[in-house]
Amino acid sequence: MMSDIEIAQNATMQPIEEIAAKLGIEEDALEHYGKYKAKIDYNKIDQLEQNGKLILVSAMTPTPAGEGKTTTSVGLGDGLTHIGKKAAVALREPSLGPVFGIKGGAAGGGYAQVVPMEDINLHFTGDLHAIGAANNLVAAMLDNHIYQGNELNIDPRRVAWKRAVDMNDRQLRQIVDGIGKRTNGVPREDGFEITVASEIMAVLCLSNTLTELKEKVKKCVVAYTYDYEPVTIGDIKAQGAVTALLKDALKPNLVQTLEGTPAFIHGGPFANIAHGCSSIMATKMALAHADYVITEAGFGADLGGEKFVNIKSRYANLNPDATVIVATVRALKMHGGVAKADLEKENVEALREGMPNLIKHIENIQDVFGMNAVVAINAFPTDTEAEMQALKEEVEKLGVDVVRSTHFADGGEGAAELAKKVAEIAEKPNNFQFTYDLEDSAEEKLNKIVQRVYGGANVEITRKAARKLQRFEEQGYGHLPICMAKTQYSFSEDKKRIGRPEGFTITVRDVSVSAGAGFIVVLTGDVMRMPGLPSTPSAEKIDVDENGNITGLF
Image (cartoon, rainbow, N blue to C red; front, side, top):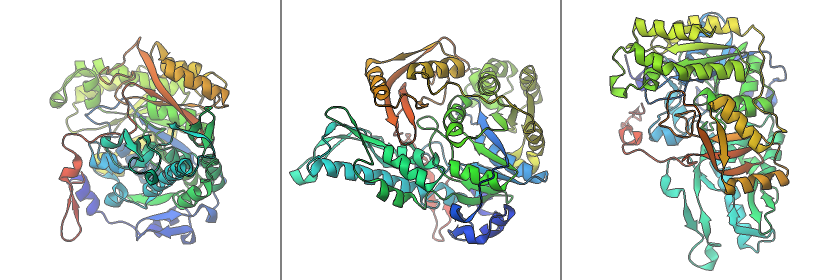
């Protein structure tokens, strides 16, 4: 089998206007970025009626073995097309940080990819650059305000707005700037976060209209005064300029799968440090033009899934009609204690030992969130019949259907059975519910997430974090939902506690308010909002020949 990039480079793509036509979107609404990419001008299409069925793709807890959530999302889209349904996928944009780091790109893999793959994984249509520029404009205007006399009485020690760059660069986590002569600015401690963690990214993804985006931007807290009163983007008069930088980035991007299923790729917040969902704008546009829309929430159902329910669904009024939980035999064996090097050996006992992790995610989807679920087994060639049978037996005990899918190797045809099952359960009513009420205190919200979703015992809040939460309450932010920043590798805050740990405590070490995006960010464990590169970054393997052909991207 060819590599992912070879498959993508050998694909015959359809002109983007033909892809748009499948959804009834006229060419006049397209803003072309070459032959195979376009932005959709939301002002020129009718998207008031969102009649499509929304399918959420989530997964068990990630492992180094891989689960294939994006490939399953893409494969399911092609599977629905294969069985005669009018389908579209709505996914996040990749970040250059993981592309050049360790995780790789986010365009799927094998014969379940979105294309043009190299473009999507690199600069695409420039959305992330626009978000980074908007973020850093705010930072520049804030520091300039302090330098020019500080009319708002901002305490330089309480600047909350970090700069952003779309790269894994640990060197920039904590810096000192403004040093040297007086005209270089006011010296202070500063730092960068990766662009996908920027509040500007969250604002873009959670805005239903351009007007709403500007209002959200205006509310973003950038600093505090000496009296600890919040200072917003509106206070430094930057909201208009920021919105001007974002007006085109807000338009959803349209591309295609290898089999010509329309794909909306728009917005890219991580789910371990941000809310982990693609844009509301793209999701609603897809629902207005397709009968089935497949969207993905980052990492496991405890992270992206929980945030989709409690943040995105709240702000977009979206209720998924079905949820796919992606699992692999390999990942289950890792949760059962098998080393990565030994995963190709049959080990039914280890798989059964790892099953509690998947079962907890199923319980979350069905019992905590009240959604209808199907488990998709992303097939690997090393899976044995005995392992598959054991997996099915354990899941079916819960009354949940299990479907093996071979989309990676076989494309849409390999996901046809999964597509039929998804279409079937999407017709059933569900009991969709939020995990907590917005009127709950921050501590109550946190305990409900930890106890109900993670399966932990309780929450411990440091004095520093507790003081901030009290202050947020006094400043009128107490009603906001919670966005947990937590390791993706465990239900707990300790990435080494795999499987289904119980009785653990989550320690809240710090909090911040994203008043524009509309949530409170809670930092747990050692999660950083600026990742670092591994000892051997993927960037070392990427090259381009004299004809411009890229190699090593996967």
